[in-house]
Length: 239
Figure (cartoon, rainbow, N blue to C red):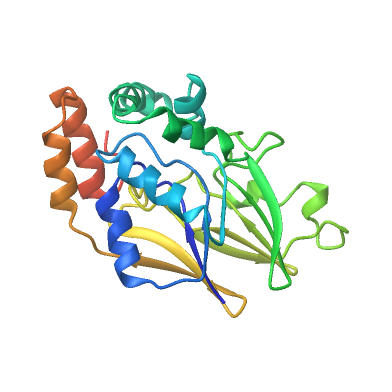
């Protein structure tokens, strides 16, 4: 079985499309943050809504939670205003059914696929919404220790927009990076696959110019658009 793992799409349909054109898969795992920062919240949301009818597991990201419940997201102070502006704009493009979909996604989930035990969450903490980005931060809870009866084969998180794979005992800790807004200064869309029990981080080019043009055609403030474009092109945040 081939499992495709996506996180932090952030309304960038063209980045998502670039991955889907390269990868076939039998099972999809999504780690949260469909919306904010990009020009295509509806297309990305509808893709996941349709995927949820098949072999799919997904969790709610902090930006999805903010869209669904009108709360604040957990992004850095530098990005909070930008996320709020894009969320207010993006909300006008979404129907109530689509916003309702965010509410159906759990904050964390445990399940088994072909004998492999998974724990997934957007960010690591008791509520699935705490602000942890370093892989070493997720190695402490008792229920993930190798000798625990609740030990998992894969612990998978998103949120940091920075990919990693780290093995501790029999557990693989994985972050696939960000589909739509990488922040490791590599602008290619980032994702992961698990095949035959082995996890791999992958990157793919996509037509960034299409996303840039669609951002420029929005009603968002020019200053916000300029910042968003810079983040896409550079693959990170430049002060």
